Length: 136
Length: 137
Image (cartoon, rainbow over all chains, first blue to last red; front, side, top):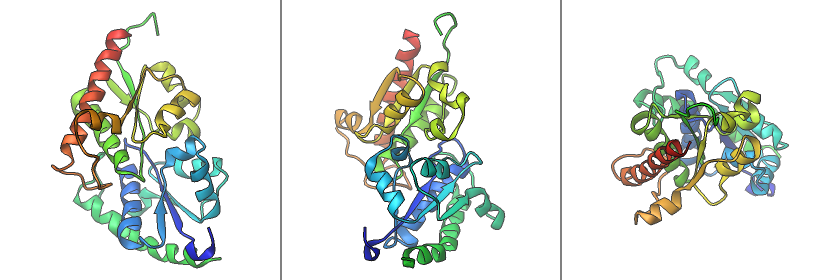
């Protein structure tokens, strides 16, 4: 992938057992679908777990933002196991500590406050995406 | 496992962030875990097979396991078998939806009534697989 087509890969936690995992994923969707759709792309974290060559190529040839939902840091560790390094490693709980008026709740889907927090977090990450996309 | 009564089944869901089928997977698995078979099921985050420790990797030896995948790459089934243990059953969302004559939802999030039939069909198949697995254990 050359510089002109360079995209920032957003790799969220894939957890389905904690609200912060859901927040991580929702933030990734906000970035990829609304805030910076032209500069970001998503990939499935489990593809790295099974050593999928296309996913490995994607995350080793492009800058990656990991968003983890718990201290186990699955997204960051899976990226590293695939040979990549996070350009920015985020913890979803820190989105909440920065915006304590928005308490995320819900496992399958977030409550309204959680969805709003994902929007805000994605907007906070937009400058990082712009920088990473512009870097050669 | 042969000498003790098996009361729980492990559900391993593809997370499929990239595809709508992955969202159907997650929503259906949560419906089983929370509503349809809350006392008979447990789950684990798939990447913990790599990022976790021995306890997580022993998941499939502690519980008979059902994997649920959103596409034919079958990440959940492959990762469970390679890193934890052979699943008892492996389900595939597109096959279930085709069997029920349902289209794959087009959205990756914000699921509501339009997506509910797909989620419900997959959840019912998982619940049925849970019952069968417990009967056989």
